[in-house]
Amino acid sequence: MVIDKKLFYGKLIRLALPIALQSLMLASVAAADALMLGQVTQNQMTAVSQASQIQFIQNMFLFSLTGAGTLLGAQYWGKGDTETIRKIFNIMLRVGGIISVVFFLGCELVPDLLMRIFTHDDALIVIGVSYLRIAGVSYLLTGISQCYLAVMKVTEHVTPSAIISSAAVVLNILLNAVLIFGLFGIPRMEAIGAATATTIARTVELILCVAVSLRPSYLRPDIKRFFARYKGLTRDFMIQLLPLIGGSTFWGIGFTAYTAVLGHMGTDAAASNSVAAVIRDLICCMCNGVGSAAAIMVGNELGAGKLELGKAYGIKLMKISFVLGFISTGIVLALTPVVVNSVVLTEEARSYLTGMMVIMAVYMVGRSFNTVTINGVFTAGGDTKFDMYSLAVCMWGVAIPLSILGAFVLGWPVLAVYACTCLDEVGKIPWVLARFRKYKWVRNLTRDDL
Image (cartoon, rainbow, N blue to C red; front, side, top):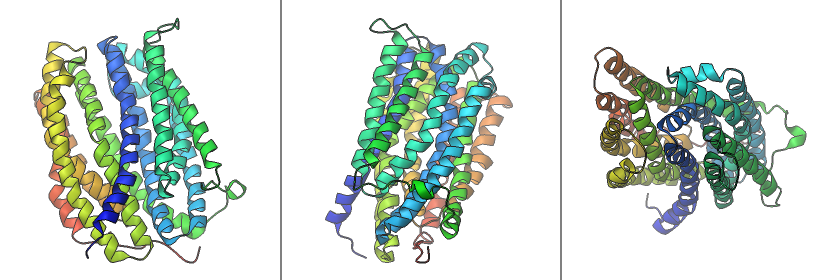
């Protein structure tokens, strides 16, 4: 089917750019933490990077939650059914609240146990525990604000959602500088300052979300029916949510396993991996933006009953993902010398970081393709189980066992182990392509009997 390229690219840019900016701004917080704390000591930077893996895992659950809400919301928005989207909003807030409370309690009650998952270095654990006790409050707020932001994106308020997130991030970075280094007469707080800045910024973000949603053109949760049971809709939501949680859990815990493996290979390996992870997250913002836009664009057409147009959009977006991947490769290689010389590392850590950046450049092709195709196109039509299956095989069946075997049994060099952690994204490209061509994602998920 021939698509209207002007309409397609206009909508893609209108959706993808604000979401990519939002993703970039969020990743910038981790980058700011790493760069600022890297100017303090290597241990401060490494400890906060390790502690932040807890939020990374929480974000995987929240990503699943907002992903399920986005895919159903996008289809109902295409259908023009705003009342059902309001019900979806209630469901998201209930589940998001539970997730946030669990992570908050973990950070407040057993932060030392959480830190020992990622490192055995007592100095790093002490710093990480002090960070988690304060940052845990921000984890409690994030689950609520992310639901608000997801509904804004689905209902064509992408730019305001990006502005809110970006404002919170800018505030976070400014407060980072003030509190970490002790500017304007404020005591120097280092890692604790980074945690405090994050908590204040997340509080402001939630306040802005609630305030903006009070405007007439915005959807708000139905407080009067907040605990109402929507049997059919809840069932549809859970059908999409559970595989997404499974996939996100595999992916999130898998990535923290990679961090833990490299963390146990020495402080230099942990430090270089911390910096590489920040750069990876920054570069991935482009594909994250296009992936989220793909979920909305394809979902809108499928929900409106325009299955052939939704299919054509999916094909076009899949091709765009490869282009993004190669652009990302070039950016990583161009940034390598700048990044290696911008942080305080030992000479051995610098050599590790250089090698990791080169390996990451290849990895970016697979990451971009899989993000747009799996998290965008497949998710738009409710094909959410495939991600879980592919991660179980490629990440947990191949990449993680190889990295553990190489690090702790065979004694492989750090860069060889790091390469193992990048195998899954590149290795599953043929499998994803085969799945894509079956077109099981071309489905209308909306109901008329709600």
